[in-house]
Length: 281
Image (spheres, rainbow, N blue to C red):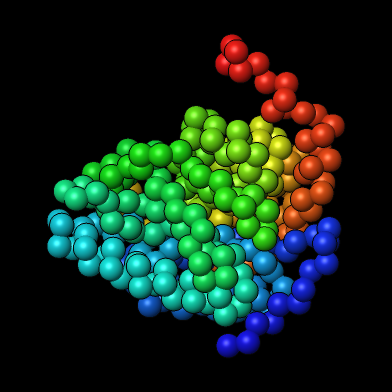
């Protein structure tokens, strides 16, 4: 499949998008079809970076044990490989979280993967598991802080949903001077104000762009089968804390532009990392 991307000249704004949709629990073909369509539309609109919602291939299915865990991991890995191939064909950077294997004897991980033009450049296992939906009973938590990786879209780091509440989870990207923080989430409308405040706050705190993808739809989530509605309020926030793009509830791409030169000027004008008292903090 030929790419529709046009070359971006140095210093030009970069088009990015969050792809929000109703992630159907256990329906990998339907979810993969929604992502394939969204990535094709992103390429047609000369987007370079796309973030998908949390657990985009399966949502939060409830597994009865090790054998079923393995089936969901395998189905998710196949879907992620298809998206990796599309990222190569369409010359995209694509991020999103999905089932991934844990250590031997452990439950699976909720893993964010970032593919740049078909290559896996970043993998991060969600650290903070959401106890109200008993996520900690179905998954094992990660063991390392989010890495930061240099890509053609800038220095990227990523976290998954509940991680956003925990400043310590984001300490490593701050010190590594990540320029774009990517967030995959299933964040319900009952706490929509928290979502917006945290995404905007992390952008200011890190002097970084934050591109956060949140799903749409309603679902029974986790072992406790909480019925949650999701507002499709994906966000792109600039390093000044200003919202550059915001989803309004409908499925599809939430598009915005990132200017890394703007971010770098802000960091020179207000050198937060240089001024931090690390001898005390």
